[in-house]
Structure formats: structure tokens, C-alpha cells
Length: 61
Image (tube, rainbow, N blue to C red; front, side, top):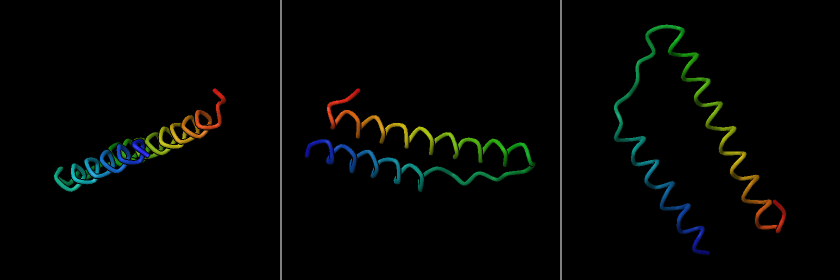
């Protein structure tokens, strides 16, 4: 259960940083494409970490 405490702490820090950072204005298509690719990459990394965690809990690596 200590792992869940770390998840909540990390999630709280990330959310607070999200609200503290200034807004980003996309001025042209290049910035929009870069932002979308960044979000896609972050989602893929998140799913990969969840898969790794699930496999490690089952005893497989």
C-alpha cells in the first residue's frame, strides 16, 4: 500500500504544477503538432509504465 501513497503524492505534485505553470499559446501549426505529439508520447509512456507495473506484480518481467 505504500506504493499507492507515492502515486497519490506524485499525482498531486503534477496537478499542482499543471495549475501553476503559465498557459501556452499555440501561434502556428508547428507548435500544435509538437504539443499533440507530446501528449501522445506521454500517454504511451504512461501505458507502458502501467504494463510494466502489472507484469511486475504478477512475478513476470
